Length: 153
Image (tube, rainbow, N blue to C red; front, side, top):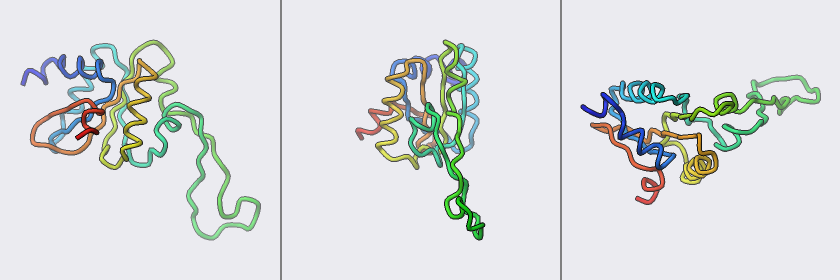
């Protein structure tokens, strides 16, 4: 129970490793407690799903284009089958604007491939203000480990 009261051990390990794989009880509640503790220690936080992330570095840090979904019959004009590319702002651009550290909490991280998880670890190494917590599934009790150590097993 002391973890839920202070979150100091979690925060220290997050700061040292940069990217953490976490297993949380399926009842929920642990994410918001830990995020609240991190916010109280000066972190800016964002929680999002890992589904549809694509290339993590481009999606999170660079201006990129997306195409709208194909909705069936469309005009035969110049953008008939593929649609026009829409430019999308990176998700972390406004969070990394000032000098505060940022925590990105990714839900459903088990859908990410090993190369995508390694890309997130490398992103944390290049941007020291960015910390990433990736939920890798459920467990009976809250447990975590550095992502690189998780990928080795």
